[in-house]
Image 1 (cartoon, rainbow, N blue to C red):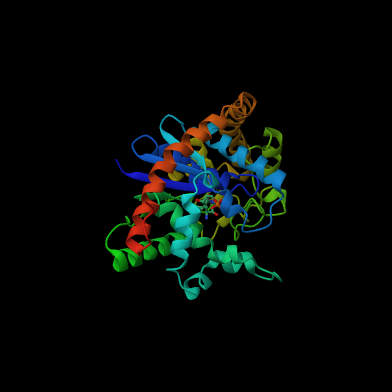
Image 2 (spheres, rainbow, N blue to C red; image 1 turned 90 degrees about the vertical axis):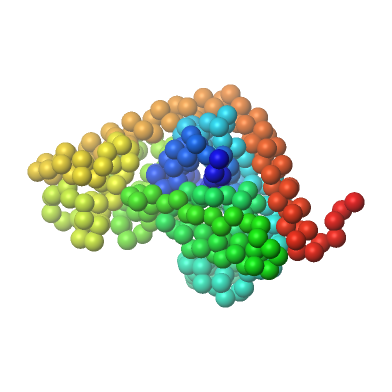
Length: 328
Ligand code: TYM
């Protein structure tokens, strides 16, 4: 069975972008793959985090995984920090990574732009991400479009390790949805929808109450004209809303376009809100039930136990290949 690995940072509220770009595919892939889905708390600390907020967000993201349909009986759900091998292999891969490669990462450029002081962790972050993936010898990595460059570096590092120390790591493939890999901000379709945007109206959080979702979508910016047409180059805003609709209603873009032919933006946006609410409301109900039950702690413990066995073996093998003296 092919292996799948992915992760989400617990650094803010998860958005519809995370859901469509990543989580929906996690749910799909768990049916016929060996899956490892983590909450990447060690990545989150590459920017300052309040400890209490980090704890709360970590539990929240893990719970959202389950509420969204990831089945702990099929997939391993765990915290990155509960499996020590990630940090260990992360360091080993950091030593194979050049400064130039890290300097070229657009996410680092974006996140460090205009900052007076930038943590070294933010800079070496992609090597830790490579370790996350390679430690399970993952074949497939479901992510949104913004992680493509990190995936390319991961592939390069795997190839570099294999070239120097003998074939060991699987070269992973990205698994990126054709539509929805980049859900855009509701107030500006030139920016991706992001949990770190200070304008709350720019994103739908997975835990936004239905009325807030309706309000945010009714205020979403739309292009001039009134035709509901998928045309990302000329109608980026409506096209973005159509992608959201298609994903939430399980329709193709053509079907969405045909449904609203001649009806205009008003009717479309009103239905869009209901379609999004119909997906998120039951998810939120499950979320609250799971939080109340406290069962997430057991799920995370079992997930980490299973992941740690695979991770420990990879670290042992990689150390041996790199020439570390084995422990007796
Ligand atoms: P993060 O936490 O920023 O985002 C989690 C996932 O959600 C996707 N995503 C989106 N997809 C579509 N439209 C959007 N607007 C949108 N915003 C976010 C991201 O592409 C991602 O798939 N570095 C990673 C976390 C990570 C990871 C890993 C991922 C660490 N180790 C190993 C895969 C494998 C990140 O910061 O994702």
